[in-house]
Image (tube, rainbow, N blue to C red; front, side, top):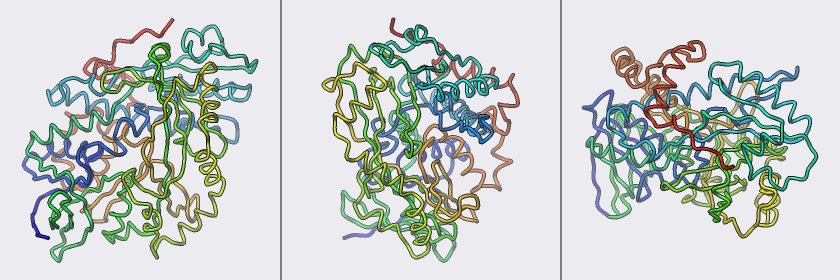
Length: 500
């Protein structure tokens, strides 16, 4: 087995949406830097970023009920919803910049306008949704959201969902036409095509096996070139680990103090995909419901209009499950291999705390096709099994760590950046809202890892993201201006009429 050695400025591990975003931003900020990418699969965007492995929702808290919890006093906490929406606005601005500069040619290749809706049934849930609507619609970021508990209005909005509904339970929905469907797989491929044109070295079928500090303080990665069956050693001043579920094991290999006392819990998923064009054409929205008791937030059921390969699709799910793999293409030993002396107590504490979650996942794993159909029929009463196929979605590794609020072994449902104290290495862990907030997350990486360049880079960042450093929630005029401009640039101004 031959050995190859090399040196570069930046190494990006994993060819998903996070590395694509960071690489694209760094090439705009420091065009002369040498960037090298290593991806163990044959193409970019094949794991978590792939369009069949995520919901394709531009997460902006317009429909996701788990972002607006009810407080003990009965009021609605919209803090997280506001933050997630703000973060998605950054992504819209950056994508708009790329389109306006000709770096992305056709935004419809990856983003489309789709109404976002929340749908609930039952008196208590309708009361919750009404309070949520009042709290959100009064905020500038959620202007234009509408609420209805009138079945006739709902039949206009979502005829497929309302037809054949015999329950006498109260039902209500909110609707926002500001929602989007985002094909993160297509966007990832577009960005990597752009990076290749910018002379970024992208190595597919290259699996990173180890990461070590060099005596000079740089980082050396040991890479297996799968195609030529050779080992390579490459050094860089900065490494970003954006390998989806594979990020945690690689972060652990760095040995940085920040990697200690962190574990991961993998959750798998399935989607039902409609194969009947007549059914597909009778629905035009992303409709999110409420999570079942004990279900993790990313298992909130939703009925989604999607555009994949420019074709309108209809998906329902996700159905959660358990696999010890950290990636779809991973190993059954991933989970056990992630348990280290420094995180074993954290992992054990989490196991004791999350027995209901484990029971829920096992229950989901054992669901028959008929049981899945029963869940779908809560959304589409007339759904028939023969109209739907099942696809396996991506693996998500939820972060487990010790926190002040939750104590030992707290399961974190969200996206998290871990950086070395000197900023020389960063890793992205966690799940939703993930890809939707890639630009916000990468700005965080840039600020933490290149603080000495913050002032010099600020004008260019402002050019790419005009609201950088400003809270849009506190600047309604700027918000309206940016929202209108990005909608026009990204082709989000035309609304497709709902089926009548």
